[in-house]
Image (cartoon, rainbow, N blue to C red; front, top):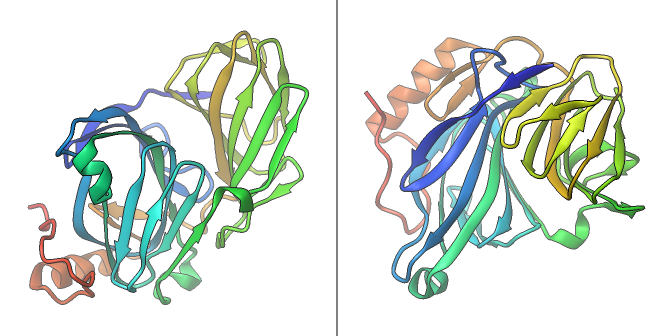
Length: 284
């Protein structure tokens, strides 16, 4: 197993932990980026506000445990995202979006906690059209038996299949274990990693440190045991169809695509989010 301790970052005032990408591991299945949006209490008059910014070559997936976000993008999408729902945006060749605390919650004050991941787009679809879809919590398949609760956020596994339109074999599951339960993590996906949000757990008897990403050995089924109530997520899938370059908010198989995207954003030659003026400028 490879154990990755995330680095602490701050995104427009929202504290996060970021285990991917890492020098130890650049990707797990299609997952190339993993942000844990840490539990944050925003007082009245404040909130999360990720201004307009661009993407190529990836899909973003936002999944909240607490709080709400407003997603708007250059396709015209305008969606409030609540806990247990999936906000899925495929960038294609060029997209821009914003994510912020809805105005009513900003006025009253709110609490934020969730995850955002990026999944690299297969090469054949990198230059395709953008797409957005919202998936309410009841549409995500759930297994809840014998103290083990699994919700399939995206992809498939544990005999569950999510409606989120992933573009390659994927597993992204939220796992809740009651004390003294065990879960067999099968080797049905070639690459897998576990991120433990809370609790006291072991993998094949080895302790798992909370808020670390543990990359599991390929081809090996492993047993997750809970010494207390545990909450985590399993990510993974088929290996990428070749290496990816990541630069700022851009992901691509060809460095020329990155260079072109940087030049276009800097020049203002990019789709814009309706009604939005402020934007995050290209870092130097």
